[in-house]
Image 1 (tube, helix red, strand yellow):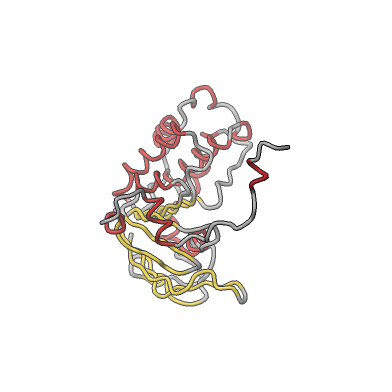
Image 2 (cartoon, rainbow, N blue to C red):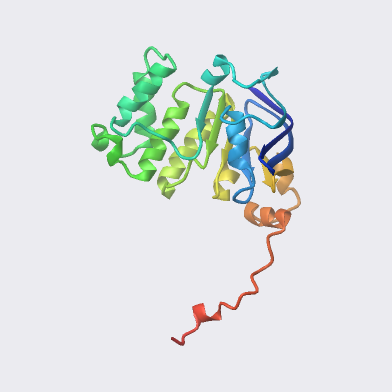
Length: 254
């Protein structure tokens, strides 16, 4: 899959959320999308999945300009997790993935379902007959990730896929996404920049709706003897420390 954005902008009324976003990415790349809260990351993901339409500019997938509605072929090749997964919680994890398999017309998905759930849910054998409504937030998140991978998408969009996961569960998800990286073009966001460092090949850094950096992760870190989090702070010039007097908070006096 190849994705190209040509001067893509998105506005909501008078407010411009994304401004002249231009990039080209392809299969094998994992693009870590970074920025402050409200920078436009989720809006970009919605544009890439046809959840929103750009106000101006052009979005091409595999060289074809996408209009108001993406083609059925493109939708079938896309896996997306945006703003947390919305599961049918009356179903078990297996039943839910069977439903997803029918949507994507996968004739014999039993092996795929079993292997994905067994890998992502170390407690799977003890919860396999329980409805998703009884799962923890992290367990539901892992089932949502499995649903995105079941049909082996060539465009994978993951907005905070590691939310709610402990270090062990996050490690399993990262291992799986890393092994799948060569099969797809992946866009992923995470507030945990150590996760981005582990999985991303490229960085797209957005601030106030504009691209501040686009390119290989190694290029961004070149010459910076620091962590990604520190390099990101240096780039985006964080707001100056508060001048408010908060000494009362740490004072021993009551």
